[in-house]
Length: 201
Image 1 (cartoon, helix red, strand yellow):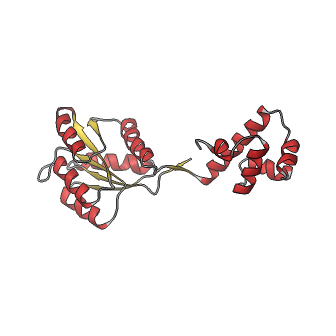
Image 2: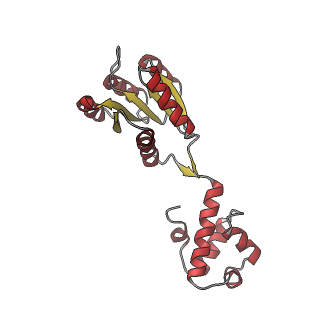
């Protein structure tokens, strides 16, 4: 399972209902979220604590989304900004890209479009990772598939890798995390490099 609970997202929209809805969707998908209707308050929050991703509305009174993007990037250049804009404001969205925004999403958008846009940025930043339990399962699955492809029994592989059948069985079932040493022995016994065995996980 992908882990997202450490990803901090800033949401700024002068419409409280939009901010609340966007925040709720992201929270339900395990993101840490802070929402603001006041752009100045959001800037203060950026000064106090780092955010990973920011969703900024273009049309806001007092400070426009374009200006807010510029000011947030001035405070913390590492924040990846996604601009929320109505279709007629696409030119303003393009201006925010010049100022450092990463992408924009046009309103109205649905839950799937919002999550897809945020997820894409989080993936590009390398912020989403696989939980240890899921990683163990995927590694075990891959070892088992490779072993069966080569027509090897568990006992044959255990003899080649100098590991007990019980150890191998636990690894294949994803019940135990194999050490790097054990994974290197297994991959070598399968005629594969360890990096090949783990590629893409």
